[in-house]
Image 1: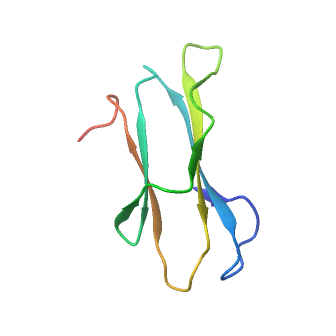
Image 2 (image 1 turned 180 degrees about the vertical axis):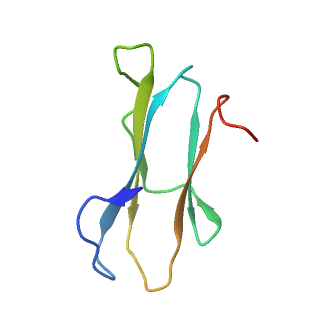
Length: 82
């Protein structure tokens, strides 16, 4: 997870969650702000093939950072242990 540009408080920015090297392609990426699921301002590249049978995807969250906020990108994939 990283910002598109250097974050400044109270200015719009994008957080990017890059997930790469996974197979199969069924994956779920969820954004959270302070533990609350975010449903608005989310954009995705969709699945991109890496050429070696694996995939990658970037899921972005448009946000305006405030002091003390915590953002989390949660990835759910069959290869990850629960």
